[in-house]
Length: 153
Image (cartoon, rainbow, N blue to C red; front, top):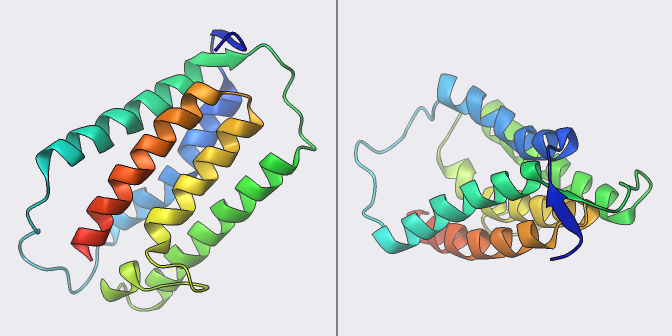
């Protein structure tokens, strides 16, 4: 925990916002065949999911590594691959007529890719930024998020 200091990271903010951009499009263009009611989910898991999402965002943006950011790091490139996969799955959904079934359909043998890919992206991005506190928050978020996603689809 000694590797970070309080500050502001533009890179951390960008890392957090990149996967969120496609969600704006989703709000504008929701599924054509969405169910009228949502399934009941576990409130404790939802609280864990939402709180660790916010803690990750705060950690990645306001806890800045004392180490210099390496723009040639393998962690950055692997993270970007998972971000690209995330966007590809979203494009599949939008180009596939916004069918809600596409949101939970496996991609490249990965079940629930819209739950798995961004979590892996966020973990690799936090490792790249030497922010292990953010990694911890994202692991907890990822567990809760994937359980909720599994029960939803």
